[in-house]
Image (cartoon, rainbow, N blue to C red):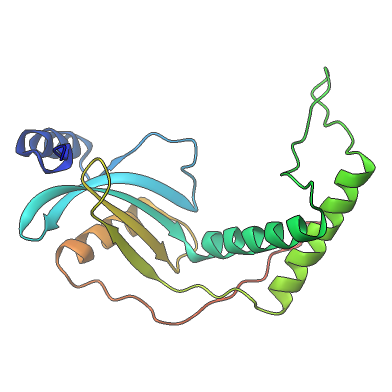
Length: 183
């Protein structure tokens, strides 16, 4: 079995130094996925009594909800359109989006319809959670969904403190969201 560098004391000390220099309790992992709804970061904590680096992703329940609605809708679209693959928007030489062909247009409309229906029926409900994955290559993985409007440094700091102090209380409520129609 290979050794997990996220448990290496030297690796942990280096991360602690980097964290101290930043004046916060985590280091953001550079990723194009990071946004106000999603953040990937490292922090130091304990796992089974040993110090470890946690590789955490934290996101809003609203993002999780829309992702699950989209996945369900894609599944339904694939059932109705056997040759369906995600629609890729092409740009012309001016940077304008090329029009979709008739089938892509039909698929897009059906997808929107299915998503609206799933949302209206509140077919998807999400709740706060922390999933721990000890089987990753670096440290311990954490998958965290929180019922917050945005993932801010304050949200991350509060999560880390409560997680490390073992005082984290998750909201057991199941949530469903309505998407805002942007006119």
